[in-house]
Length: 96
Image (cartoon, rainbow, N blue to C red; front, side):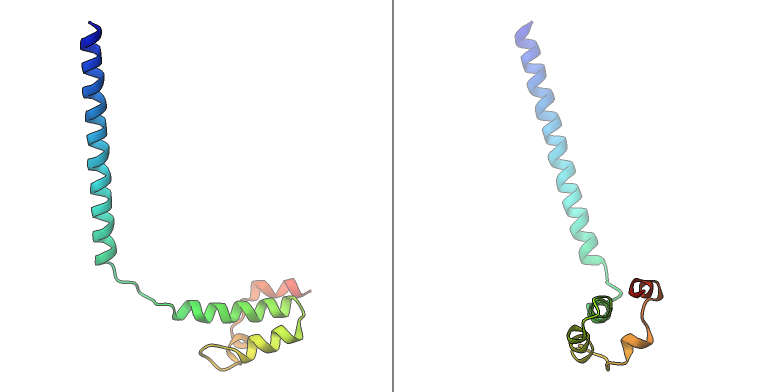
């Protein structure tokens, strides 16, 4: 009786383990296919602009003239005027 239970437990554990391995392999394959098939609508360009604006915002919020000058003059792509034309309005109350 105990030997039959031991065999049953081993078969059950082996079956569950095999199912987990098959499910993991299926998940990995489907994720790889999804990543390879997807096209990203944007590149790092948006992130570069966001970082520039973030640096200007933090320089203004910290009231640091040196950081502000650095943030404005070290813009990566656009002229220094852009962050002043399109700042996120919800962040300006921090300055008050």
